[in-house]
Length: 370
Image (tube, rainbow, N blue to C red):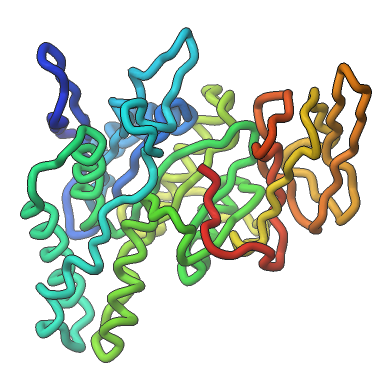
């Protein structure tokens, strides 16, 4: 195991922040896994603890066939943001920006470097594009903020990986994934191993999050240079490991083992691993997600648990105004899976309370809720 510490720019005098990564194994294939880019989403960090322990064991046993890079604390900036005892890890406090939005667009930047050098040799094209990605990132002018510097470092370590997993969680949720539709067949086994309750597929969520910054360049380049042999060489997804309270050891160990078994399928680990379960949830379009909003302010009572299958018209929650006695049942408008609920129990204007994964597109444009 090799520990890599990278200093972040623009820290205040007398302080220093570092991005720390752990590199295991060697070989031509690579997986990159990071946890808690939204720094208050801690189930991923807990799973990373188990992954680090197990990867040490596997490396000592000589069972690694490739490189695995692990960033257990992908956001040291947000990890230290606590306001009056409440962790504020989703948005950078100085700018208000979401830590997982607006990553650098590698596709546009590498086009001038590879356009006239691409051919019909798939492996050569992949090597050329990855070399260009690294060169572009290294040649960028100095970062103008600590956040920008962090995002660049994360992308620098992930841009040449075959597999990228960005570990997150939601408020109160079942395990679920966000990925490209073209890559769903490869993600199906991990989904089944994790017993995930939903998979949301889209090419462009509208926020250029970290996983899209890793996977989308390959899709864009393959379309721009259709005559060249360019595969989707980075299998990247956001993996939401349940809800914010799901940091128990048993769940963390099971999730880590599922991820390791998946990496073995990708040719990164040797040995015998459990077979893929036959049961797997359905993948649905991210455009099919219903965001459930309250009709007025009030105390919220949820009527259905996360993971429940719901039908159009079925009550999901009730909102009660304690002063004016307004009592409203909020019902599902699509058939699907209730996969996320808000953690707060007081309805506020413009803030969603639940999400239902439906089969048919009902939204367009920006799909992410900040």
